[in-house]
Length: 124
Image 1 (tube, helix red, strand yellow):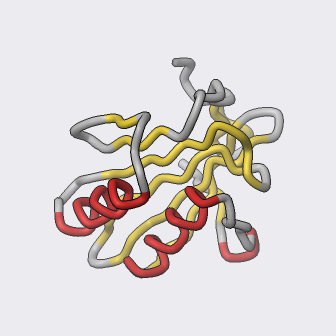
Image 2 (cartoon, helix red, strand yellow):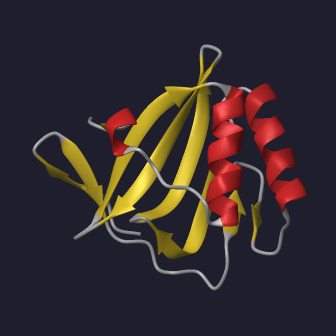
């Protein structure tokens, strides 16, 4: 994996190679064959396990989004979108557990259309 590079303050990552199907990953394991109930179980684990993260990667871009990832901060959930153009840029927003669950399930079901006005670029 190549390290990201900076473009102004934004961090740009190399594009993710397209998987055959969805992949679901947290600190403990990575699944390539799973159902929505498995996704819901991973989300519940995210909400109760400190320092846990979750990444859901799609086989095809959905409205420029290749993957979504989340982690918790002080009772809120940070959801990040991996948006592809010449590279992959991260955009984030803070949300509730319910909104995070909806974003992940909609992305998995192919219905997720992000309102990019709600997201800010991840900067380091």
